[in-house]
Image (cartoon, rainbow, N blue to C red; front, side, top):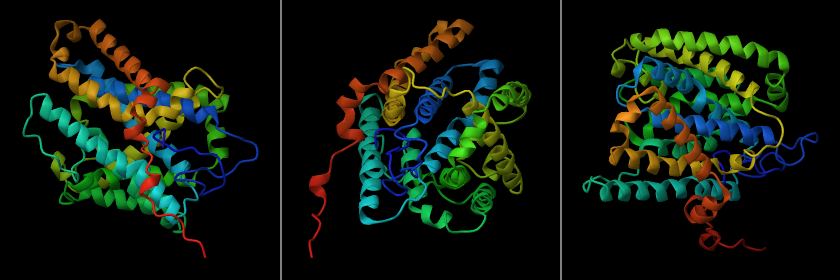
Length: 358
């Protein structure tokens, strides 16, 4: 699984997340690779803003704006390329080797990293995903439930009810960060319902033009909201009461965040280039960038780089953003993918029982 979202061409169900065959779209569509690359850049930039000391209202505004849609758009595309997933033995094997095994490898890797960089007692806890690793078990579980969402009537509405129930409940527990799995579920289910025509729609010139004022309004709303709310809502890690709000507000916020995320995801996709560019090949390596950039961010924190005086200045914050974008771009590149393929895309054919012949 070379990217966060598997895109093996072929008929529906041809792979763990393979898209349905579209006669008018032979091979890989560069639009989706471009979208994945641009989204992973936003993810890395957002993570680089988190440790900034006294980041200020302007940085918090952009942080709020980006966090409204950067993971939802990833998850929507993941759902789109999971259409028709059949839970046959070979498909489940691909899920295990493409998601569960890398999760285990990087849980161990990040644990060793913490122990070697100042936290010798840092626990190895597979049921408590390390920081950004929550996405792997989440995608694993979402894909296992794909046949249900492709069978049930009104799947997005049902998934929203599930997410709302998660947001109003504060005793779900932290195993595999189930709060996040439940609250981000509607975006995956929405992706399952989308078809190429929906993406063609958001790529129209009229939508691109309309997205500009919509994004400006969203930025203004984020600027207004920064001193009045907490960005913890965007992480989907907690129930409403854990964030100091009445339980019923969790359902309201779930619907509001879903609406805002879908609108801003459409605005983002409207500006994604349709043609093959220098970034297109990098979109095939987003899983590498996602899993590896955490070492760079955490390493910079431990080295005290975010405490440097220059980082507290506006040019310094811009520099941090540019460096984060450059680092994740490098981590998505073919040379890095060749070096770390053993961990991200382990070849485990030797561990599989040979097919029995009649």
